[in-house]
Image (tube, rainbow, N blue to C red):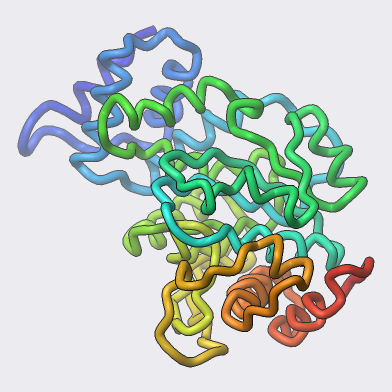
Length: 319
């Protein structure tokens, strides 16, 4: 099996090259993940796609092949898929982890998965998991952890090592590739609600349209803090996605006023979560992000429910 036909489709030259169909993209990714594709051809495809600009059918085809390569999920699917693949976050705490924890405590199991490169110590997702009581587990143990605590984080290298290898080609290219987007779309346990962050606004529509092709029931795509699904509470941001499989768009609203960077606080996630420090802005990041997630799940008056969950975060509670 060779990738040469797919390189030719993308690289024939001006006026002759075209995008891959979903089926072609799926077939190309199957070869890539099998290890049968020449490394030079893998690099060529990824960089040709970057130069051209990926289309939804290509992302959907790559994602479908990536999903098919995963070990089977054991147990009921989670309510929420929450990927974390942002790279380069050098400032600011991963406040979205507290939001994910609140959603889980509301009775909606959350599966987090990811890998984050080029992060400062204070911005590290994995280092902060324990601060809000989220366990890092292997794929085989994830279902049991969801049954126990309602939330789990699976590192990409435990989920699908070959995808990790492709993601780390960024270090070779010096540029991100579409693998970052594919991993956000991965939804490895087939959750009905997927929450995805982006850094570049143009990817909101791309991921929505790819989700439509993949049959995702509910999807929310947010230009969030550091590229994560994390809301700036002072910004009324356009949120893209799907509701019942139909394209959907709305505004996030801005529950607080003022101009402040997400990273413009000395508080830590641990201190805010445990109540050692009272930080109104950090709390607003957490609760506004929680509200967006709850709204995607169909919770009425999600903003009020998020505030209530925050106040009762150290108790077992549901909305």
